[in-house]
Length: 209
Image (cartoon, rainbow, N blue to C red; front, top):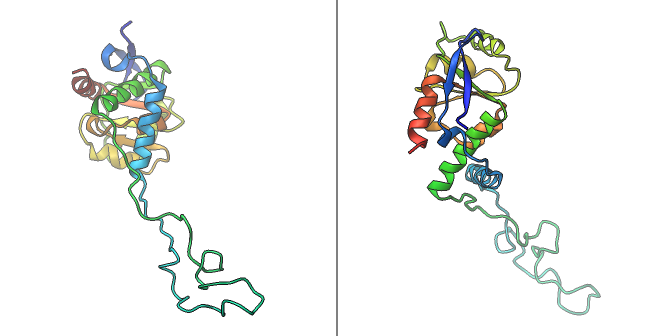
C-alpha cells in the first residue's frame, strides 16, 4: 500500500495530501539493521583519547625499594609495580579508533527503514513550505505549536535555510538538516520528523534509485 500523509502549512491547516514513494517511506522496518547503524554512528563519534600509563611509563621506581632477602617483607622490584599505589596500570585504555563502517547499501536501507518507521508511527509531518519572516526563535516556536509538536523535532528543508536554522537553534530538542545531511541516528533520536514537500522530493530522488 502506497503511504499517503497530509500536507500542512505553517499555521497548522491541512492544505492537501502527498503520496510518498513506497520504495523509500514504505519499506519493512529492520530493527536489527537500525541498531547496527546507530552503533556505527555513536562509535564514529567517540574521540578515543582515554589513556593510562603502564609501569614502563610511570615516573620513578628506578631502584629496588629494599633488598631481596632478610627484611621479612615480600620481595619487590619497583615501587611502580601495578601492585603499588601510584604504580602502572595493567590492561588500561590507550588512544585508539573506535569507528567502523558498514556497506553503503546497508546504510541506505537503514535510512529508508528510519524514514518508514516515522511514517508508520505517524511521526512524519509534511509542510507545503517553511518560510519565516525573520530569524527569531519565537517564529519557529509558533510554527511548532501550530503543528502540535511539543517534543523534539528534526526539521528538514530542501536547501540550507539560514533563517530557519537560526530560528531553531535555541530550541531544546529541535535540530535542522538538509536531505544530504540526513542520518539514521538523528531521525530516530527526535520525536517528530518535519519535512517540506520539496525536501521529501529530494530524499525520494536520491534514495529511490
